[in-house]
Image 1 (cartoon, rainbow, N blue to C red):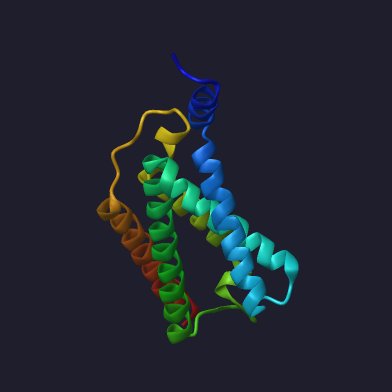
Image 2: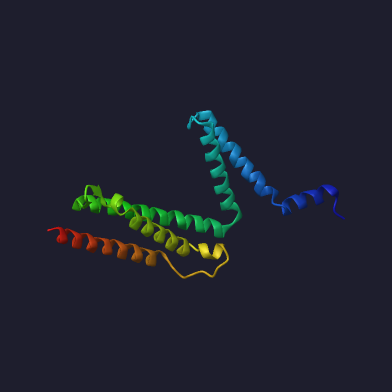
Length: 167
Protein backbone atom coordinates (compact mmCIF):
# COMPACT_ATOMS: atom_id res chain seq x y z
CA UNK A 1 0.00 0.00 0.00
CA UNK A 2 1.23 3.46 -0.92
CA UNK A 3 1.46 6.03 1.83
CA UNK A 4 -0.12 9.47 1.32
CA UNK A 5 3.30 11.12 1.08
CA UNK A 6 4.45 8.68 -1.61
CA UNK A 7 1.20 9.19 -3.52
CA UNK A 8 1.67 12.95 -3.32
CA UNK A 9 5.25 12.69 -4.64
CA UNK A 10 4.19 10.37 -7.47
CA UNK A 11 1.35 12.71 -8.45
CA UNK A 12 3.71 15.69 -8.44
CA UNK A 13 6.17 13.80 -10.68
CA UNK A 14 3.36 12.88 -13.07
CA UNK A 15 2.26 16.53 -13.20
CA UNK A 16 5.73 17.67 -14.25
CA UNK A 17 6.85 19.15 -10.94
CA UNK A 18 10.57 18.35 -11.54
CA UNK A 19 10.47 20.40 -14.74
CA UNK A 20 8.80 23.29 -12.91
CA UNK A 21 11.48 23.14 -10.22
CA UNK A 22 14.20 23.09 -12.89
CA UNK A 23 12.64 26.13 -14.57
CA UNK A 24 12.39 28.02 -11.28
CA UNK A 25 15.97 27.10 -10.33
CA UNK A 26 17.42 28.33 -13.62
CA UNK A 27 15.28 31.47 -13.51
CA UNK A 28 16.37 32.39 -9.99
CA UNK A 29 20.06 31.55 -10.50
CA UNK A 30 20.37 33.51 -13.76
CA UNK A 31 18.43 36.47 -12.36
CA UNK A 32 20.53 36.41 -9.19
CA UNK A 33 23.81 36.36 -11.11
CA UNK A 34 22.68 39.15 -13.42
CA UNK A 35 21.53 41.23 -10.44
CA UNK A 36 24.76 40.59 -8.57
CA UNK A 37 27.01 41.74 -11.39
CA UNK A 38 24.46 44.41 -12.43
CA UNK A 39 25.07 43.54 -16.08
CA UNK A 40 22.00 44.98 -17.77
CA UNK A 41 21.07 48.09 -15.84
CA UNK A 42 17.39 47.52 -16.57
CA UNK A 43 15.57 45.19 -14.21
CA UNK A 44 13.17 44.29 -17.02
CA UNK A 45 16.05 43.18 -19.25
CA UNK A 46 17.39 40.96 -16.47
CA UNK A 47 13.97 39.39 -16.09
CA UNK A 48 13.59 38.76 -19.81
CA UNK A 49 17.07 37.26 -20.09
CA UNK A 50 16.48 34.97 -17.12
CA UNK A 51 13.04 33.85 -18.36
CA UNK A 52 14.41 33.09 -21.84
CA UNK A 53 17.35 31.14 -20.46
CA UNK A 54 15.02 29.19 -18.14
CA UNK A 55 12.78 28.25 -21.05
CA UNK A 56 15.79 27.24 -23.14
CA UNK A 57 16.92 24.88 -20.37
CA UNK A 58 13.37 23.58 -20.03
CA UNK A 59 13.20 22.89 -23.76
CA UNK A 60 16.51 21.06 -23.58
CA UNK A 61 15.35 18.94 -20.67
CA UNK A 62 11.77 18.28 -21.73
CA UNK A 63 11.61 17.69 -25.46
CA UNK A 64 14.30 16.58 -27.84
CA UNK A 65 12.19 17.34 -30.94
CA UNK A 66 11.70 20.97 -29.91
CA UNK A 67 15.37 21.30 -29.01
CA UNK A 68 16.55 19.98 -32.36
CA UNK A 69 14.03 22.25 -34.13
CA UNK A 70 15.25 25.35 -32.28
CA UNK A 71 18.89 24.40 -32.89
CA UNK A 72 18.27 23.90 -36.60
CA UNK A 73 16.30 27.17 -36.88
CA UNK A 74 19.13 29.08 -35.19
CA UNK A 75 21.59 27.56 -37.67
CA UNK A 76 19.32 28.49 -40.57
CA UNK A 77 18.95 32.08 -39.31
CA UNK A 78 22.74 32.33 -39.10
CA UNK A 79 23.04 31.13 -42.70
CA UNK A 80 20.40 33.64 -43.81
CA UNK A 81 22.14 36.47 -41.93
CA UNK A 82 25.50 35.58 -43.50
CA UNK A 83 23.81 35.47 -46.93
CA UNK A 84 22.33 38.93 -46.40
CA UNK A 85 25.73 40.19 -45.27
CA UNK A 86 27.38 38.76 -48.41
CA UNK A 87 24.63 40.36 -50.49
CA UNK A 88 25.27 43.72 -48.86
CA UNK A 89 28.99 43.42 -49.56
CA UNK A 90 28.23 42.42 -53.15
CA UNK A 91 25.97 45.44 -53.67
CA UNK A 92 28.51 47.79 -52.13
CA UNK A 93 31.32 46.40 -54.29
CA UNK A 94 29.31 46.89 -57.46
CA UNK A 95 28.06 50.29 -56.23
CA UNK A 96 24.57 49.36 -57.30
CA UNK A 97 22.06 52.16 -56.73
CA UNK A 98 18.43 52.59 -57.64
CA UNK A 99 18.29 56.29 -58.29
CA UNK A 100 19.57 58.03 -55.18
CA UNK A 101 18.66 55.12 -52.86
CA UNK A 102 20.46 51.87 -52.30
CA UNK A 103 18.86 48.73 -53.70
CA UNK A 104 17.42 47.51 -50.39
CA UNK A 105 15.56 50.78 -49.83
CA UNK A 106 14.27 51.00 -53.38
CA UNK A 107 13.10 47.39 -53.63
CA UNK A 108 12.25 46.59 -50.03
CA UNK A 109 9.17 44.56 -50.96
CA UNK A 110 11.22 42.23 -53.13
CA UNK A 111 13.85 41.66 -50.45
CA UNK A 112 11.22 41.26 -47.71
CA UNK A 113 9.38 38.64 -49.75
CA UNK A 114 12.65 36.82 -50.45
CA UNK A 115 13.45 36.86 -46.73
CA UNK A 116 9.99 35.53 -45.87
CA UNK A 117 10.39 32.74 -48.43
CA UNK A 118 13.78 31.83 -46.95
CA UNK A 119 12.34 31.74 -43.44
CA UNK A 120 9.47 29.52 -44.60
CA UNK A 121 11.90 27.17 -46.35
CA UNK A 122 14.02 27.11 -43.21
CA UNK A 123 10.99 26.37 -41.04
CA UNK A 124 10.02 23.46 -43.28
CA UNK A 125 13.55 22.09 -43.44
CA UNK A 126 13.95 22.29 -39.65
CA UNK A 127 10.93 20.04 -39.20
CA UNK A 128 8.50 22.74 -38.18
CA UNK A 129 5.63 21.13 -40.08
CA UNK A 130 6.00 18.02 -37.98
CA UNK A 131 5.81 20.08 -34.77
CA UNK A 132 2.50 21.63 -35.78
CA UNK A 133 1.00 18.33 -36.95
CA UNK A 134 1.60 18.24 -40.71
CA UNK A 135 3.65 15.62 -42.55
CA UNK A 136 7.29 16.57 -42.87
CA UNK A 137 8.87 17.48 -46.19
CA UNK A 138 12.30 15.93 -46.69
CA UNK A 139 14.64 18.93 -46.89
CA UNK A 140 18.14 19.23 -45.55
CA UNK A 141 20.82 21.87 -45.21
CA UNK A 142 22.23 21.02 -48.64
CA UNK A 143 18.93 21.76 -50.34
CA UNK A 144 18.58 25.01 -48.38
CA UNK A 145 22.11 25.96 -49.42
CA UNK A 146 21.25 25.28 -53.05
CA UNK A 147 18.17 27.54 -52.78
CA UNK A 148 20.26 30.29 -51.20
CA UNK A 149 22.97 29.90 -53.86
CA UNK A 150 20.38 30.07 -56.65
CA UNK A 151 18.85 33.21 -55.20
CA UNK A 152 22.26 34.86 -54.97
CA UNK A 153 23.07 33.84 -58.55
CA UNK A 154 19.75 35.19 -59.82
CA UNK A 155 20.40 38.47 -58.03
CA UNK A 156 23.93 38.60 -59.47
CA UNK A 157 22.63 38.15 -63.02
CA UNK A 158 19.93 40.75 -62.32
CA UNK A 159 22.59 43.22 -61.13
CA UNK A 160 24.67 42.65 -64.26
CA UNK A 161 21.65 43.09 -66.54
CA UNK A 162 20.65 46.32 -64.77
CA UNK A 163 24.22 47.66 -65.01
CA UNK A 164 24.39 46.94 -68.76
CA UNK A 165 21.00 48.56 -69.37
CA UNK A 166 22.22 51.77 -67.70
CA UNK A 167 25.21 52.03 -70.08
